[in-house]
Image 1 (cartoon, rainbow, N blue to C red):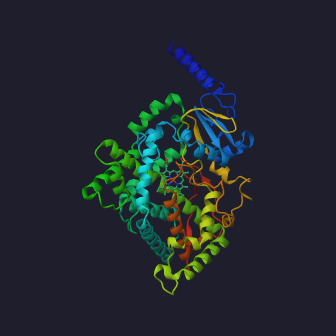
Image 2: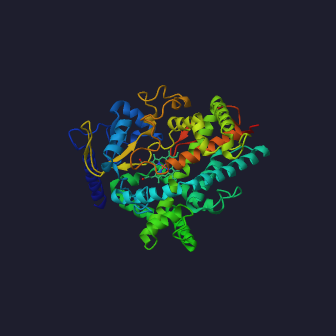
Image 3: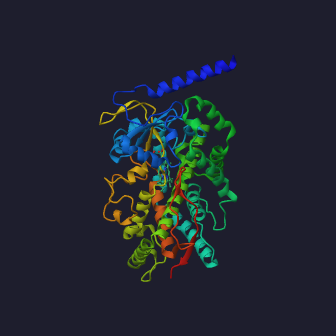
Length: 493
Ligand code: HEM
């Protein structure tokens, strides 16, 4: 009897689920592959979904829909459409999907997870705080952190050991963020596996894993409420990151003076206030956003550039020669007088366009973030071409498809940094997204990556440990990482 009822309810559920996927939403609804009840189109995706979805766009066009289980998801593979959505019709695409993993931990506080007018308010506060810290202070802090990185590399080189780019570059971006937000120095000897770096790094890695792989329970409507409770009651890593931020707020408050701004935390305290739990959560969620969105992204970009420098030694030499000649002609700027400086500064960027192009081409050729962060529609909407997108649809930009689009890039499957030398901008190159909700840390990221990369190239030649090219395969996750590899460092004379 009970078994019969369960089977009956299950059949009703399947029928209802199928109906919700097969019913006609609008006469101009988006095309897309056939979804099955419950799983939708998940069964058509492999562990490299950005490739699968690029392939699908050959059949369904520049914009199409898939069902990730029950979540109606729009895949955008064209820069003009991306602009229409994220710039021209921005207000309709302002939100993030209201799924348990977005709500969990922050309850839609902070920058990444907030929605609508709350997001606008948060963005204004964070933008203001970042503009104020984006003065001389940030240049000095990046400079100091690069010194620590180069010193560690020198020690490795002189001891004959191999260099582990993931470990040291993550430590570099993590230390830069510690200095920027908390005004704290991380010493050369501190380990990412012990001490306070580890206190934050370990739970962050678990959060990346959860977000990166995604969960079926997040996208199945029937399991969402229980999944949210599971995340809240039985997982602790997101709260460890949030609580780390809270602990730092209280520590800051012990010495806080409203008219002195030591770091980003002081500015966030000033802008949000700390009288209510809500304000404290807003600050700690913002801090957690910066660590989660800004450490791994920059470290992975640097790791990928090092990989490309090894695999394309001719570009490594070209970059080195460009830096050397920029330092000779700009020699006095760093206090070196007539002698050549032995350190690259952010002010050298103008004189080293090839190094900048190397960074851009790596982000194009190997986008680190396959779909950026998902957006969600606030209402039904008709696009310029008449196509219909329903309310609460998830929107994903397929960055891989954009960067391999022949309409915008000649020989898109070729790694060629020179393509960015003569063109200031390409509408399909948007690694930091576009429109008012693009990456708030894009300037910070570009400064940090430039200063680390150029000084590494100036000081060392990178080689693979077996003389062969490094395997360029990337593993899918929140960021697309290469398989771990080690590097032989050769000191430049
Ligand atoms: C190479 C490095 C980076 C890349 C490629 C990158 C890319 C992105 C992308 C694609 C988005 C999604 C924007 C959207 O919804 O359309 C984003 C959002 C964000 N990024 Fe970055 N990012 C990088 C580094 C950073 C850094 C260093 C920080 C912090 C200093 C940061 C902080 C954020 C935040 C807070 C958001 C959420 C913005 C919002 O919801 O308003 N990112 N980033």
